[in-house]
Image (cartoon, rainbow, N blue to C red; front, side, top):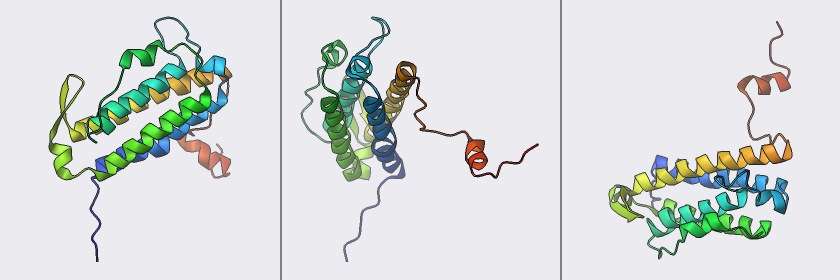
Length: 177
């Protein structure tokens, strides 16, 4: 009988957040937006949704796929923000799905030694656990920006969350005062 290796709970949660929470929300936002809205910038000091999606791909590839997974680091960070052409929605979605899928595979293969070993990424020296946590935090930050931009541009409630009482209220279980 082959014994299955236990996955670190922090890594399992990181992988879950990237693949099952943030990725679907960002993809949903991309589906809501027109191509013009995807590449719209509120001002020159801000990024478009398209730029943020490219930036997340680059970050995940550099920190997880390359930094922890050993693949070559081919990131060109400035290009992520300087992209102004209207890259197609499908291309953005495919790139983000691919990056998160590859990162998921790397995360689920990490050993306890990989998590405690120091890795060099960009100019930083971090443990594998710190690198994974950085990516989850970074993804969360920019997912929030993408969600806010999508709500601003469309005026739609994306229905990603409910307040605690809303579920009971919808089920008719909220007390009336």
